[in-house]
Image 1: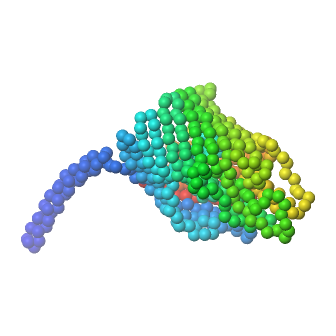
Image 2: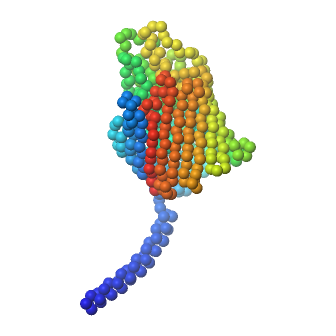
Amino acid sequence: MNMIKRLFKCWLVFVILLGLAASGFGQELFEGAADKEKDTPFTLNGYVRGTLYVGKDLENDEGEIKSGYGELSFKVATRKLEFGDAFAEIRFRKGNEFDADVSEVNVREAYVNLYAGRFDFRIGHQIVVWGRADGLNPTNSITPQNLLIRSPDEDDSREGNFLFRSYYNVHPLRIEAIWIPAFKSSYIPTNLIPLPPGITRIDPDYPDNNLKNSAFALRLNLELASIDGSVSYFNGHYLVPGISADSSGTFSLPLSLDVYPKSYRAHVLGADFQTTVASSFGLRGEVALKKPHEDYRALIHVPNPDFQYIVGMDKEFKGNFSLILQYIGRYVFSFQELSAPASPAQIPAYEIEKINRMISSQKNQLSHSFSVRAEQKLLYETLSIEFLGLIHVTTSEFLIKPVLRYEISDAMDFVFGGSFYSGPNDTLFGTIDTLLSAVFTELKISF
């Protein structure tokens, strides 16, 4: 028994000494880690999320899973050096979407910055967003969007492209120049638009990587304490293609016709601004004039020149309530009403023209739309109730998106909401509503 007591005492002393040593070593290790963190060559953060979309199967009048997936995102930013730094984000996604298994790795962005005096240069896969209007940006013609992305975060619809971007900084001016070597199209839901019997979709006709098909853009930014603004110019293949066919005239019967997305080059001249009036109201605006290179009268996939304009107001009220209201207009030049043809052989061209006008929002010479975005924060700003609404008055289309966000902890968020589209059958929202209207929920942990 005495032997056991002595062994127990020796063991207890050993544990105490080991604890003291570990405590001192841990303090040194912690201090070393803190010093090391200052010299770390990069920072790493990201998130893990699970997202579910549930909608309605109209054929069977039942609910169905529209999308369900888990996603892991890593964001890496190198330490800023004297002459440059770098950033990359990679996403891993696994799940089911549109009745198909999804397993993908997506390099969302990966680029390197070079700083040389007043010049900044960026090369790599990038996402570029131009314009100061909320949600809709007619001057934004650089990198594409995927309108079928299932995510509560609207920015997830933006996609990158490989490009060269440079700045020249001379306050209060900032000159931006972009060269886009290869074309990448926005993904629009043309596959959801029904076609008459005998018309078949085939692979798109997009430009190859020949240098003559590259695009470039210039932007002059004015950055003052009282107002921000810019003027911009883009020359290249427009992000949203049209629909083309073997011929734009008459067709022989019985009908057998292949149609396909086809891009076109365009000039886009734009401007935007943002300022504060009456000390508390934000005022913003954006305009863009688009003119295709090719003859829009002869080529069925090329839309008419048009002029789009947006003016908006935003205000933050007491009680953590914010509001953004916008008017959106579009005027189409050389517009002609589309009427059903007398000859059956001309019906395919008529149907394709209807689709192209739907895609380019040129169903009417003059169109009017309104958008509203409201947010109320509660419970010490841990709970957010958001509402987004968009109504195309001219075509009777609308989108509403209510969202509730709750911050469970500093790193954990819960989201519940819905996206609901509606419109006549011959409109874009009326065509996609059955597939894209859904209720969604998401649980997300950031690190």
